[in-house]
Amino acid sequence: MKPHSPTQLVRLVAGREISTRIRDKGFLVSSAVLIVLIIGLMLFQVLLGGGESTSRIGLVGGDRAVEQVLQQQGDALGTEVTVVELADEAAARTAVAEEDVDAALLDPTGSRPELLVQSAGGSTEDLVRSALAALSVADQLTEAGVQLEPAPAVDVVALEADEADRTQATVVALLGVGLLYFLFILFGQFVAQGVVEEKSSRVVELLLATMRPWQLLAGKIIGLGALGLLQTAVIAVVGVAGALAFDVIDLPGQLIGTVLNVLAWFVIGYAFYAAVFAVAASLVSRQEDLGSVLTPTTILLVVGFIVAIQAAQDPGSTLATVTSYVPGLSPMVMPVRQAAGEAAWWEVGLAVLLMVLAIAVIVRIGGRIYSGALLRTGGRLKLREALAAEKA
Image: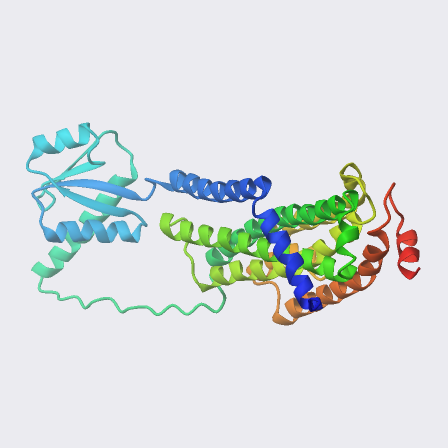
């Protein structure tokens, strides 16, 4: 039988990792929880904002012109006005009392129009007064023979990106970074647990009889990385679709670009952290010892997330700027600076280049440590001992 090529061996390991983890209850539960959490947050936002910008106004004795003026005034004030035609004053009083309408306007074109409300002082009163004032002025000008020209349309040219869009993009980026933080830890733990399981069960000895350590390491990272990218993409699609369906946020191309940025930074950040987690896990042979070797990397992730939160508040600060170039921290900080419009293209390119160089160094040195430590069981192995074992 013809032996497998290195590429085929890496593919086999990657396929094994995907098939194993996709059936893992922890993976499935975490995916479901994240999706439910995102949908729940959007529903909560809808409930908080619901009813704040709508108004139902009953109308007795008015015409189409009155209805149009009320709706135009509502648009000017950021309120969606729905006009309900009512038969008479009795019907209007009943509609207001039963809260079918927020207010009812009687005889709007007469000399003494009346507005029926549950209690005085609401915003609907100001809206109706402004609408009737505008209608009165228009009628008087028409009676005087004055013909008004339509107001000219104003073309708005923004020299800078709209602040509201930037704020929304920054919020989306921060949520994405929170997702990255969770997924880096989750899939890093998957990689680390897999390494220790293979060492403790001696499966690794069988695997290394047919492949080299770097092929085993590459297969693990690629397989779980593909699964993680798929999970992240599904969550991103659900989030974007939910935002559109619930009308939680405006979603211009800028925000879609933010989502794509987060996905790209997942790929780079995952390659970095998965390699670090795998190398660290190869130094121990028991699941109980994993915490001690993974703590430094976990702390780096926590620091990155904390700095990302600070960067969302002040993306131009020295701390945010400097850490957005630091390998390991840049996948958490740079997406926020990009969304806030504080990162030039060359800054993003420099951060990516530094990350790629860091990944190359980790794979180079870490691969030697991984190779030297895989077959060493017992207590925790020191880095020096692992390197010496690899040379031997």
